[in-house]
Amino acid sequence: MNLIEESFQSKEEKKKKRTTGIILGAIIFVVIVIIAIASYLFYIQSTTMRVLLDGQTNEKLKQILVFENDGKIYAPIKEIATYLGYSSYNGEYTQRSEDQSKCYVQSDNEVANFSLGSNTIYKLDLTTNSSNYENVYVDDPVKAINGVLYATSDAIEQAFNVSFQYDQDSNRVYIYTLPYLVQTYAPRVLDYGYAEISDVFANQKAILNDMLVVTSGKNEDVYAVIDINGNVILEPKYDNITYLPETGDFKVETNKKVGILGSKGETKVQIMYDSIELMDSDAGLYVASNDDKYGVIDLRGNVKIYIENDEVGMDISPFSQNNIKNKYILAGNLIPVRKGELWGLYDLNGNQVVDFTYDSFGYIARSNRDALNLLVIPDYEVIVACKDEKYTLLNSVGQELFRGPVADDIYMTISGGQRHYYITANNQTMDAEQYLDNIGVRKQSEGGTVNTTINNNNTSNNNTNNTTNSTNTDNTQNIQENTEAVQGNEGEQNQEGSGEEEQQTQEGIEQQEVQDNIQ
Image 1 (cartoon, rainbow, N blue to C red):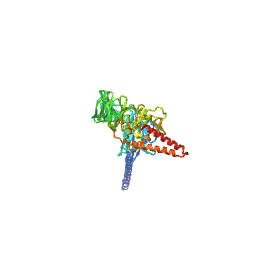
Image 2 (tube, rainbow, N blue to C red):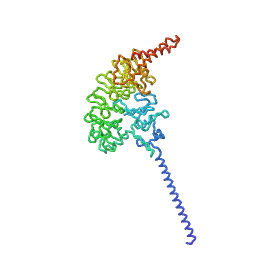
Image 3 (spheres, rainbow, N blue to C red):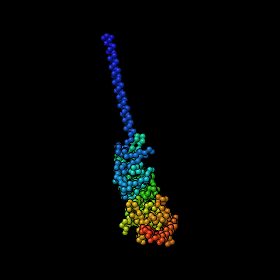
Image 4 (tube, one colour):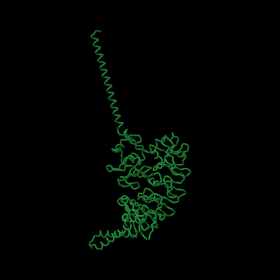
């Protein structure tokens, strides 16, 4: 091979090497670009907001959530209900309406009521016979966005019994429903040596606080409470256990006696009663019974009303239109108690404010077909009491607002969705709210009920232990003076005065006659 051929061959080899290098470089560059693009796409995907419902991504659910600058998440109540296994309606439970400022959601087990501007959610367990609502309080009130009611994730979590968590670092929202959580933890219970999770709805709610009410593997009739890691909270030795979501405690039963134990296993109420039912978590009271006698104890077992009565609380089912949410507490402060055939009233501190005097509380409509049963006039926090088929009103400290039970009827009507209240005496009728305004009982929105005593030399008030703010005399005198002025003006009016004015004057006279009758 001559020098010319060697030089040519060397150049060809160098050219091939350069081409191979360029190709390899291009391949490496393409690979790097692909990796970079894949990494970027992965980053974008990993940081893009995702909403997972029971472990599955749900794009539609993500679209209805509203993320605010302060980090709070709002959801349309009625729309999110469909994703969480609930039905939704306008109005209130048992009083469905077209009122869009209120709505409620309902599952097979529970109802939750929402109201625009309210921080309170009223829940009713449909799996029990109790008519008492659970009051759930949240930090932020229900608000409207484009005419639709929205609630925060905290409210959604509480109302729908779900776990609702937002991980800002991963930009993920995780929502787990109660049935999914029960299904998830069921196999773990077996690993911990227990038979199963209690199928009682209230007990299943304990999962939302990382606790499990379970039955023993050795004896399915023995109950225990463990945490989600299997650590024992209440030992497997109880005949029954019921979780109390409002207090976070447990009602336990053994040898046909019940008591209350805390979430750390501590005894709060001794196991010594035949029955215990939560009266109200805000008041911190239970109704307790022994030997068919009833009384009231606090959350630590201290007796507030001796267990010597035939009934505590009353049947509120005849008063469904009154929207009463607690059969134990009326007018915000009064506990109805029956001894024998007569009823009295205690306040939330356990003081008796009305002796056992009345035949019943509440008015049952009889003659007027438009009249509805009435127990409480809610805005004024007064209740209807009956004695010998005559009626009176009692304010929130148990004081009579009439001269004894003298009214023939005290009832409610509903017209155009509005509630109206009336008092009838001697075949004359007056507006109950107007009467209450006249004697100085203010609406709650105006600062609360004024303690009012009706001055009457012939009538003694049962509530001698109460301090009174006696404004009725001056109010009644003003009413009388106004009525006299109306009557005088009527006599001076020209014969051509309108029939409408005469009718208004006559109505004023009739209103005064009713007031005179009851005072």
